[in-house]
Length: 205
Image (spheres, rainbow, N blue to C red):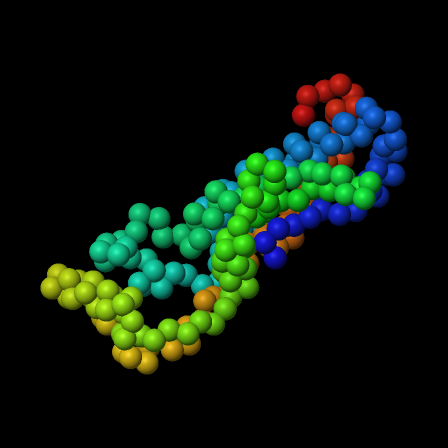
């Protein structure tokens, strides 16, 4: 799941007795304010590798923690760069106002099919075929390993792949959007209600 769409806001319309244009506009503003708050929080948690307050079950491999030259990466948090792809959107769908956030396409930012496929792979996990040292990637790893070996780097051994190494590599499952929403859905709905009431009283939110 690469995005969350908050449904049931139609029921919130009824509970808050939203009928006039002023009330609808106030509710829309309340939802946008909460959507932006969620977005900022989600970005920070992705950068730290703890979506929903829970770290990923799988850490980066030794090779993944090194750059192409075999040097340690400055940021070793899995998938931290994906934070820049996060968006939120508020729209009317079949008469119901909906909030969508996560890896969302909107008018200003369209997400390509290749990005969607990559995100799904990382969140759901996937097995992939790899031919080990017989590939150009395997040979490049060997060159890096050779340089590390000369420096007596203990990680050098991980860069020398056998021909059968990784014939079926498992990309670990690292869910992001769903655990974040499970941890924040109650607070989000409460904040929307509170923001709406404050807006109707003429207060800033």
